[in-house]
Image 1 (cartoon, chains in turn red, yellow):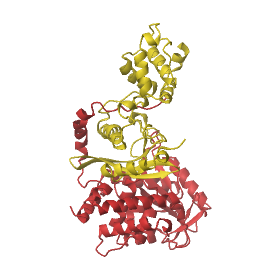
Image 2 (image 1 turned 90 degrees about the horizontal axis):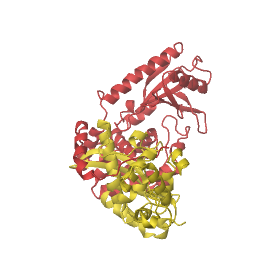
Image 3 (image 1 turned 180 degrees about the vertical axis):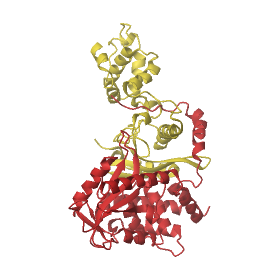
Length: 299
Length: 222
């Protein structure tokens, strides 16, 4: 299989359809979250919409976190006086129904039972900067500034209009498969900045050019927020160890490309159906008759 | 104490080369003098992908004598006892006292992955579909240790197993000690060979760790 054909098949294998169980679950949870926020902030007219990879078209089954933004009008303090108040009030509202995990600007929700099952949903509270309901201030738990200015529409336009959406999806898969600790948003911006944007949306050219930059410029990898270039410090997304790992894994990927081993980077293109998996493992049983028996050190 | 790759500088390059041949997607790198192997392990059947796991393998200071530690760094596996995964993502591949059955100082990293790791991952796939471990499992904690030593000593008497483990904990054991089997004879006149054999195979620090799982009543009766 030619690399381009192989990469297209990989994209197909890792896409997440609207009728997939994962997407249906996300949509159901989104409805519940939206109802809860509208009920708790009934007088505050929040704007609630999808954000993140769902609207940018970069979602893959291996990393399908959904952002739900909940932005409040700029001239109304009913959701909270300050950005921190808004953030805390949304945390408290969500905590009535979910186990909440406060993150930098978002709030991760999990099931309230002891399993704390991950719903793959982050709620992002914020306040519009003016009546145009475009630029938004987000609260930041850590970082140099407590306030972050951003713009969801600019992000969406920047990513989805980049002509590199498919390359971004593959880069996300590469990041997930190597467990590189970099926020998806950061990776998206890196791909747009460093990958060659072929007009034909050539996947191999895009990926190879991206990896070549990472391999050769480990110390010079930087990210700028298109919604506030020069204003938001995104360097916290790129620690030295993350840069180093990006560079090392990029070098490894390029070596594999050179030896024609695309399958080592993204795995085989052909995938065994879920329903067949148990039967196939059973076939291995004779060869694993003396296999180690797993244990757990629990006192 | 010098680390294995400091004692033999060529060993790291050999390890990298070996992995490149069988698991080219895995990256070997060093952080604070510790060598890690990291990346995806794809389990396949007839060239088709069965499942994929992103793992980090940490090589101990005394590698290859010491056994590597494996962590699920992608959060793919639930970190619960039933799946034999610690809360920090470390996989419990087997009772540490029985590593020698699957991993010897002559074993390579490839042997480790194929013999210890891949069956564990296969079992996880099966468990996700059926709720059962297909190739068997040990009970958690002390019970699992007893299961292992019951097979070795052909007894389920926990007091015997406890005494045996205590002998394994000693850096050196003596022939004049009373035999663990309870016969009243000296070890040299009874099960000396049994202790000697396992003493060679189970590091005394590992035995000490296992003994720490023993319940209080066994310590009280000792």
